[in-house]
Length: 207
Image 1 (cartoon, rainbow, N blue to C red):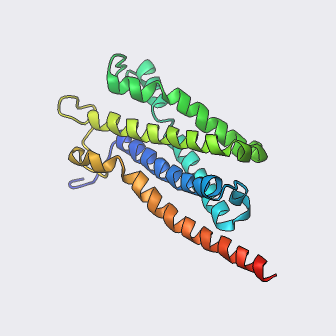
Image 2 (image 1 turned 60 degrees about the vertical axis):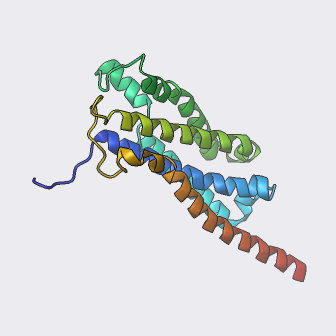
Image 3 (image 1 turned 90 degrees about the vertical axis):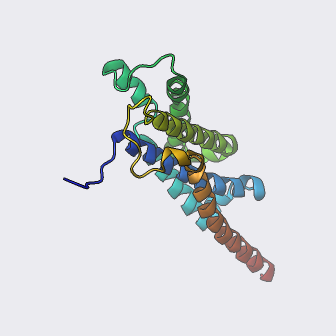
């Protein structure tokens, strides 16, 4: 159909990865507030706003990771079996995007396992595991974006130019965009959570 807006599977997966990184950024903000600002990981359980936000955005991030089909790993499997994308073992973009994806899978799978099957222990490991998960997500998004955009260039036309993502000329803005939006959402969540903590403290003082 003339004028129909289409997008490639590669762009779809890149968007999914971007949204996952955004959710991971929001989740990190709630963990940072509890573990570092208030120095009390238990707030993620006792502060209802923090609890709901941390759980929701963490769940979104995990779902988007699996929905994005293990960004990087599918490229590896596709390259091995179908040669789509081509197995470019010497290509810097391929090396950086694909091989570390195995480590990312381990981190996110481990955190997901603890979250659903050993919840109490996740609060003990929360500080380093939360940061590790965020770093894994940030790495996945940044390498996915670069890998996608580098394959839209006329010199390497493996993918169509983006339809919904920003054009390659604005890659400098596209990369930090999920972090910036995540920080903004996190700011409003933390402001509400902080107000709730103040109300609790005032209630204790009155008693």
